[in-house]
Amino acid sequence: MTAEREAALLAEVPKQLFIGGHWVDAASGATLDVDDPATGRVIATIADAGVDDGARALDAAVAAQESWAATPPRVRGEILRGAFDLLQERKEDAALLMTVEMGKPLAEARGEVAYGGEFLRWFSEEAVRITGRYGSNPEGTGRMIVTQRPVGPAFLITPWNFPLAMATRKLAPAIAAGCTSVIKPAALTPLTTLFLVRLLEEAGLPAGVVNVITTTASGPVSGAIIADPRLRKLSFTGSTPVGVRLLKQAADNVLKTSMELGGNAPFVVFDDADLDKAVEGALQAKFRNIGQACTAANRFIVHEAVADEFGRRLAERVKAFRIGRGTEEGVTIGPLIDDKAVKKVGSLVSDAVDRGAILLAGGSAVQGEGSFFEPTVLDGVRAGSDILREEIFGPVVSIIRFTDEADAIAQANATEYGLVGYVYTQDLARGQRLIDALDTGMMGLNTGVVSNAAAPFGGVKQSGLGREGGAEGIHEYLETKYVLTPDPFA
Ligand code: NAD
Image 1 (cartoon, rainbow, N blue to C red):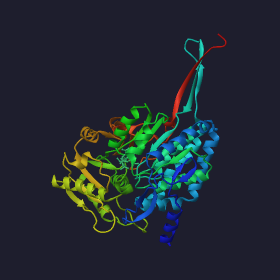
Image 2 (tube, rainbow, N blue to C red):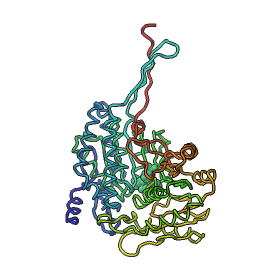
Image 3 (cartoon, rainbow, N blue to C red):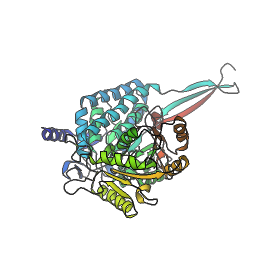
Image 4 (tube, rainbow, N blue to C red):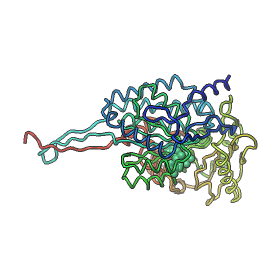
């Protein structure tokens, strides 16, 4: 039954580019294969766009920009709300599709549908709350008017790890603000975006407002779009090295940019923490999405008095995880996205062990079909180990110890990243000090998950620029315009 449902769903998902309201093949006729990471098998073959297709997609976005900006905010909001409702009707299909193309367990995929869908609803509500100001200048000689306008055509690039939420977190505020866009999902997981855009189309989104290109030639296709002077906005979620390269390209046309980049989150456990809750939070912060999240806890910085107990309890829980294809009942750990990811995680674990870390659980790739890595706990990770510096992007806990609060803060901030930090303490004053001390854009205080459509998501340092979601998210797609007019009564 599940196999039949899967086959029917995969048959139904669009396989073409979406340009100017039409589903079309790549001009060259080229195609790319999408794999199931749990089996390595091809599940769909879709259009592989070239530079010309990217240019046509931008043409369509540019052509639709003026009329979309002039469309009443209420209408824009109601289309988003319609897409939210359609997604609720199709939520089981959306979840299954994500599990099949990306690998996360079905329960987590359902969670992403709830979280990702919420951006459609949140920004349907924000569309009608784009405000301005009106008032006298300090000299009393004129009236100052401040308004917000859509920035213009946007290029949205998303990663493979949250195929739905990363798309809605960009598309929804762009649509709400009155911006048209071209979206380019990752070639590893493009099907969810194609499915979502079909829902937006069904909800009545006019032709050209959103255009989709799927491609294996990310660099050349994106480079040409970013170099086009008609583009006004670039929003990227992905790794820091690619983000840095795109920022340099965006500088040539002084594009407004939003960058949601990599992370290296500290998870700090004080000796006064509720250890049961810290372990629960650790499991969420680490193993959600099989560790493949920018918000994943990367370094567990634990007070020396509780580190042994914390590691022991965590290892016990981790050993009870069930590895398998995410569609199977009871599976808690799905595959990594591909074999390259398995090799990378394996080499980070070997480096840590070679330098003296102790394996409390797991430690190896799983032999056989698919790209699986055992959930792993490493204790006593030595300073200088690669695993403390790099984003692990896999199901590996690495524990280091601290002696006092200053030491914990210094270790937590010892990274060029600054996306999120997690702190477990029952001391309110200490919690407040940590809010100020952590160099991160977000913090979980006694919780292992912070993401929420109503919250400003984003990082400092090399984790990025700008915020997505919350009241802030729509401003990434708006420009402020100020007008002065002489006071008619002066
Ligand atoms: P990636 O940087 O390899 O790819 C991200 C996107 O950029 C994909 O669509 C890819 O096709 C595209 N891309 C790659 N090279 C490009 C180029 N030269 N020009 C234009 N586009 C290019 O990242 P990934 O492996 O897909 O995703 C994982 C990374 O994303 C991790 O570093 C993770 O931390 C980060 N991430 C950050 C957030 C956040 O909100 N801060 C959220 C999710 C993921």
